[in-house]
Length: 187
Length: 187
Image (tube, rainbow over all chains, first blue to last red; front, side, top):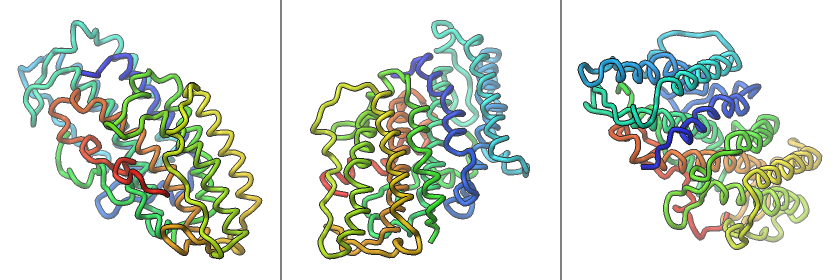
């Protein structure tokens, strides 16, 4: 096991500001590009991260602590953010993500004591038994997945433009972690 | 064609500081993890980016402008940074990368006029004819590739830790853009 509370928090703390630095004031061309129909642009990824801060990580942690395995926690709709159109700018979305994340890290630190809570189990609607430490590890990997997704989507915008170098640029070939491949699933 | 000089520079400008924010003061566990023998950790990726700032992008641009297709430009050894062990901290490496990138963007702006230079061709040792606009597009995608690589390598550190959620996290399966897959090739 590599998971460690402090190291996990290091990543969770960095994600919003890393994305803020990378995406703020970028041209619309970069922010609106995607990998084809049914795939997400950078706006949609940030909206999904906001949605997960509100309705996934902390609510599930609290649910496990309160309910244990007595009942499955409500599924998180990974596509709910797509149902609401939002006119806010990227900068406003990034600010919301950062504020929610900061609040959630504060709550996380207050709520979870490794020695008491890491092995507590809840009941995932699809997987059955899951541990709190697995949920926390997933939170970290979920951040990393979506940073990689944003970067990959942007890279693919230049797929034709790189000419013969395409051969050396694996990012233009794969669909690593693409939402497309698991569309319709609940996380 | 999506390539556009100003938009390309937007990404080139952001990469060093994005990585600086993401990687500074991270625990050694995150900075030293890799995807197995022959693959790179975050230190090695940053060293490779530094090496490319010194010996790849600008030197090749200047070579094309001076020599055109008259002779192939010298191959860039993608693994040369691995031959020199360096004891510098991540923060020192990131600072060097940022300084070199800033200088190179200044040189790029002075050197390249889109209407004059984009279609100029050079002779790549493996590919033959390549255009300046393809080299510049590749510079951008190369940045994005290596941001994605760092993030993917970190994600895989928690491959076992996420438990059953592994199924939903595509980043843990693929080897998007991994250096491993093209080891030994010159870029």
